[in-house]
Image 1 (tube, rainbow, N blue to C red):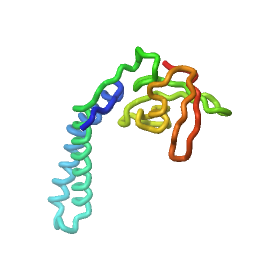
Image 2: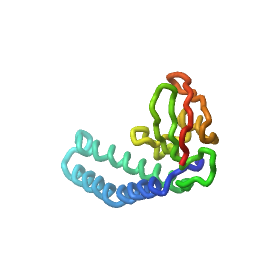
Image 3: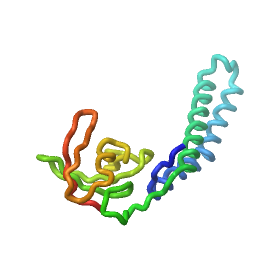
Image 4: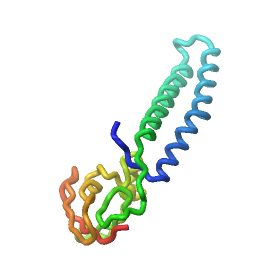
Length: 153
């Protein structure tokens, strides 16, 4: 599995989710399964099926988080480079539009509504390696556009 970029905060959040799933959630699902099994005919028991499905989801998520955290590369959130890299906060402006601020993060932490874009997204990928005041062409599914980099932190 290739390395995944995570901020320290993102690594901590995923670790907390993993701990919660391993302890609290796993126990809750086990209790639900036990109660459903005591409830009668298992083949027709909707609660038993729901609990089995939830157990599969919880175990799958635990495995996913373990793999992600084992291969995580925690990024320096204050890049020492003048070029845009994972961890940088970038302000860009499209012609005729207002400035937009984005933090470049790995895919596991991306949340565009919070201004956190993946280094693998069209905009994130286009910005990587560029510098302040450069104009960058972004090839997105909805079409291409140009942004100017007006601030890099």
